[in-house]
Amino acid sequence: MLVLTRKLNESIMIGDEIEVKIVEIRGDSIKLGISAPKRITVHRKEIYLAIQKENIDASKSAVERIGEIGSFLKKKK
Amino acid sequence: MKITTRAYGEIEVNEKQKICFPDGLIGFEGIHHYYLLDSKEGPFYWLQAAEHPQLAFLLVDPRVFMESYVLSVKESELGVLELESRDDLLDFAIVTVPEDPSKISANLMGPIVINRKKRIARQVISDKDEYEVKHYILKEMRKETTKLAETC
Image 1: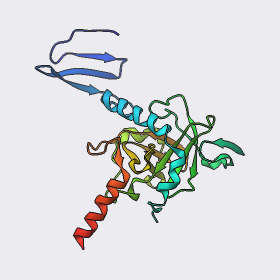
Image 2: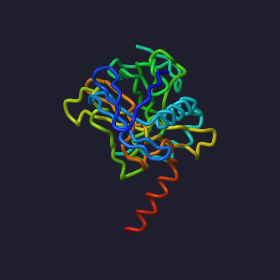
Image 3: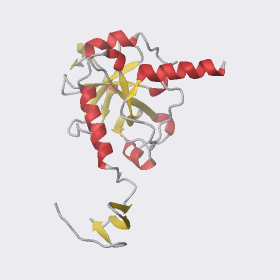
């Protein structure tokens, strides 16, 4: 991993389109400002990890139990 | 043509049911082709990986159990779908069915969006903090029933 030291209001460029700027430093929290083209999506890592875990659980769904619950729910008209 | 599915073994599918996920699903980035199949049970659909018979995800329209649900994602997240009109947009939540089926849950944090005309899809991340990875469907439905009772 590349490690760079930055001060408040300094930034780094990733490629020539993505800028990550240190906007605020308070205690052990750092606020980052990210400028990137619209097609680039930016999310907190823990959200990615939560969705990844849920997808893995979903892929192991108990297929044989689905019949039991299907009857609870009706298709929406 | 025929494919092998996790839920129903070998079945006949139509090429029109085939959907491309250019980015894959989160955690399954390398798998791009799925078939969207009607489920035989209740309001569900199957997202069956085209080349991996054992890989399939159960999908549901969240409005089935949560009347107030609205898909809320940044426009940039939908870019890859090449939508010409919002009418072409379909959205689903992935369902997890544990051994105790009463604990069935839907993931509203990472919904699936599909351009039904071009059959391009993506798993996106919700903008709304109240949408979580596990919404217990039966519990949500009980909440809806209570709400109805209150308005009567």
